[in-house]
Amino acid sequence: MIFISIIKGIIVGVITAFVVPFICINGLSGLYGGLYNVFGSRWTYIAYLIAIIPTFGYVGFYFSNKSTLSNRHRWKVSAISVFIISIIANSVGLLIGYILVLGSLETVNVEEVVPFMLLLGTLLLPITIPLGKFILDILYRWIHKIPFSTSK
Image 1 (cartoon, helix red, strand yellow):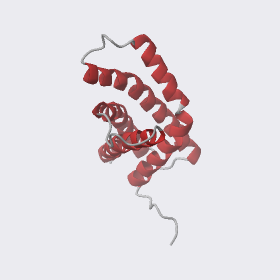
Image 2: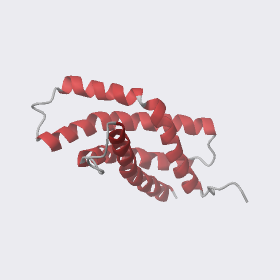
Image 3: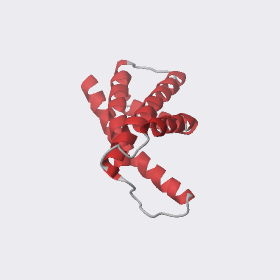
């Protein structure tokens, strides 16, 4: 059961790692005046994959050990998970993206770029935590086989 829950977490993580950057790229490019590249840069997806898959795998393991979790506790789990994903994607993912795009980090001022991206990720937490709660609720319901509809 635990192994299957980890696999379910990884599956939800992979789907999320492709859907969330797609929505962010298209939403931001719409705000900036139009779509120029629907799928965006490949490094964005790689940064999210590196951050989301291990986190969601661990959350799947955590959810398999807890038969019932209160709504408040799920908010805490989502806040911690989103914060970890934000830190990893905005530091390690950013550096990997620069290496893939530029070939090296010689022309990048890493000492200023990484703290700015970490600050940006932290400032966006009020937007990303509810989205993370929604996604983790889907994972929680899938692990515990709770139906999504409450009406009969």
